[in-house]
Picture (cartoon, helix red, strand yellow):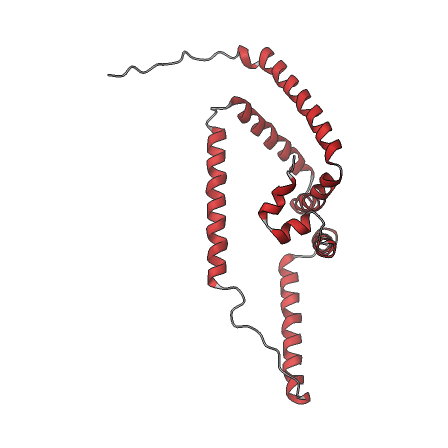
Length: 200
């Protein structure tokens, strides 16, 4: 399933948060995600309304601080001119472009049907996701994925032997099921003759 070094390769801080090595940061991320889910799903708070309210509060704080600083001889707030640099934005865009192209290439390879087993697994996986997606709202599904990312790697690290044993058993059962499906149904599907092109 997960290799222990997988999250370490992705990034040090990210690995510490996902594997719960930095317990404060991990708890803060989990609480923050849960609070966002609670605001939007349970309280049905609108994202645009939230952004406007946060902007109003930030502007009020800066306004009061700036005016109080002039009266009380405090240092006024120092707000940077550039919060998101152009270089950082370009790096994010290039990374997204690279990942999107990689994902498209993988989808094209699967959809070409060269590997029938992989094609059927992809179709089955997407069908299962569509069934699950129809049972939940998009926000609930995102929150569920977030909680899984936040908890499963750490749980796997603690119960690695048991999970590997159950996964191996499950894979054996799936292979047996696929062999039965292949012998009973897939092998009986008529296929056209293979055309061999002769070199001129």
